[in-house]
Image (cartoon, rainbow, N blue to C red; front, top):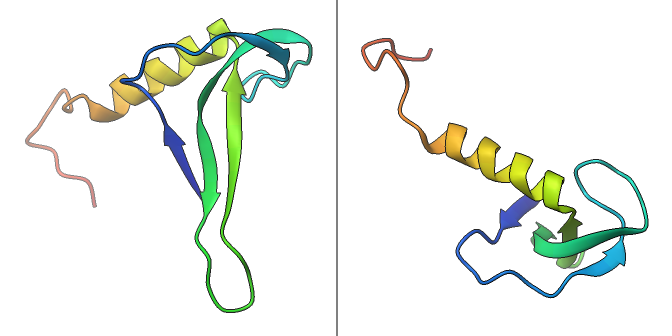
Length: 79
């Protein structure tokens, strides 16, 4: 399974629903991406839309920024 986040698109119109990040229901949420699974022998491809509240979207953007940031000590290699 893969999670694809939409970071460069214009924000969508909010709707009421469950948040992917904080697992609460009946919040103002926007579509932030989808959970996907590739098709193959014995199973079909699926795409499940993901929605997040404003706080959850902010957390996801911080996680993405941390993942894309260069390490503090670039001379230390992982592994």
